[in-house]
Image 1 (cartoon, rainbow, N blue to C red):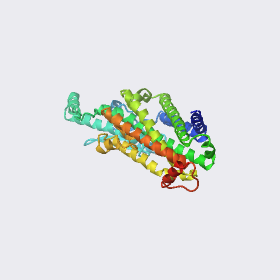
Image 2: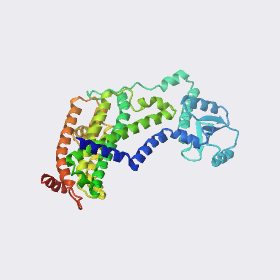
Image 3: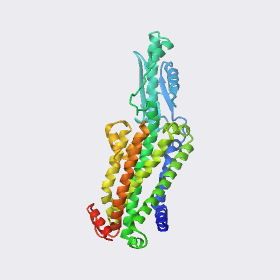
Image 4: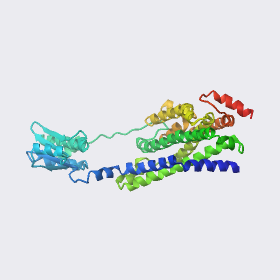
Length: 416
């Protein structure tokens, strides 16, 4: 057991101290702060101009500008409509020189007409708030013409009461689905990264030890099977540590943004009303998915003698992960689909797809437990086969780029 912990520590510390691991961790953590504070950075480069949201209004009547200001305020728009004494030629020159963001010309003849002018199609958010305010102005003006009161206008445009109800026992309400969707999406993405990144790291590590002949020294003092599982555990602990760093960095990045998002992030991503069991299942499927693919990766990594050959031999495993991610991400929109249910019991898809169903649906407890049992059996079978392949594979040298070498590795391991 002492040798197991030595290899475990070596696998953990060796990768944790590499420049690539440190750089990846720092860059990803820094990107969280960059994205969270992107609006503040953009405002900084804009020079904090007070005219950034000023909309100059050409209004010959002088009566339409106050109404536009009122409607913009009603939709909580940052755009400030200001009457201007400049001519249209001067306004166009101001836009070309960058001193004016946009202007609008309002006229009223047969009806309200507006012409919105910016330097590019993206100017001032493409004028979505302004267009909405102008449409509201048209409604108000038309109501005045036909003599409708404000109460009658409000009654005319009041929305109908519309409720959704699902009769399926496993269905959640639309509100509950919206709360869960963000969290499930984030956690599926984390599980996807874990099962595609860390097992690949194991395969590269095993192949590197073989190519440098370090493997021959290691297996002379410790069994290949113990060596394999110690590496899997060491890299797995490294993965958990890195995910905790990312999660902590993301939390403090949002807190540092100083916006309303910082206070409402739990509601945005569905953390506020989600069950503790969902987080437990997320961690459990993270571990099971990692071990499932890690055993497979160690098996494949033991078959190659050069690190250059690892990616080619890992392609089948990568395809399994990619297919699982496609099913999971498409299933977010329709978690009760038959193909999603079937895929949730296939061990190589279950870490992503069954967790999707756990997060999005109120399914009986026996369903995720059955999926977990299938995965545990598969990990056991893969572990048994993987140990035999690994025992012989670490002793194989020369070109090896075919899955047919598994049989050769098993025979070599059994004869060892």
